[in-house]
Image (cartoon, rainbow, N blue to C red):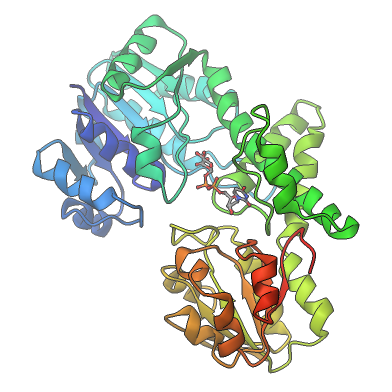
Length: 439
Ligand code: UGA
């Protein structure tokens, strides 16, 4: 058992802290927000994540999981401090390292024991070398502090499972002391460990995320071509997936990748490459295709209808993917403003994303358009002239093809997630437009 501190209680920080406690470590999570800390002490998570609150309560009760705003106390005697704060994208596409650097300085001020600083946040290659120097220069006590890279591979919605049952733990260290300490911390997880140097670990994270983003953009590119040549991307993906060099995951064409990771990490690597004088053409193409793909539903609907003026439009799904309330880079946020601008009367449904969406578009009128939030897909579809599907939530998949016919004024559906079988929709008399498939 080690004494661990975790900086940041977002997706990465909080899930790391909770899973470390679940594996027997004594963990203190630090956040600057008093109210958030008060809630977390009572087992209330600031983010929605399946299974997280149960594990929080269990480990708080067991006395292994603590929350504080007092970073000095948390870091003072920690064997390791995990950094899980955000590295959002700056306007120029580079990663904003201000939060990571602030935490690094706070650690340097506070530590009174030898301590390993473990960076879980996604940071550009070389950042951890700089952080180690920054900490070394600002240390108050004469102790040994090293920085390790330990990138996180969790996905939102399945974060707890992804952490406890990770495919691999990547640790990037520059000394045997750091490697041994971090390996020991992870021993009880009983997972494969890939031990490399710090820069390789940093690159593994970007290369992994960007490869997945590339895979999605590639499938979207092929989907667009499928529409032109009369092929069906679902069948194409299935045919490809039997080749285990290709695999059967991340082959779903749709309306592009969103979220807090792929958009930011593709831009950051492309930016980093340019700084080294290298054109990372794979990422340039990936980003370009994704930006266009996000507007595919709007464009298809526009072409079919010419005007959205006073048209009742059912919008099903707002979040960037199911299982999360996160709207960052969600395709809905790219399409809804265009529909509102053109006078659409939107009825939007999302099982958990509505409150966040209201922060962008409060219920009521916006210019020529209007948005109303409803509590079921059926209420959104009632009397609608068009339906746009942005997220493949289970609640939305559960809508039967016949319901579109029964509930809508005219059964015209644009599906950005290829939820339905073409034949079934046709049999029920629904005009169905999806991605990369015949209409
Ligand atoms: C992603 C990675 O999957 C995680 O491994 C990684 O740790 C995480 O980023 C991160 O860097 O923190 P996440 O953004 O939560 O996780 O979500 P994904 O499930 O990967 O989905 C990302 C986007 O890709 C979604 O908008 C999803 O709709 C889209 N997607 C995914 C597709 O369009 N097609 C697919 O086949 C798969």
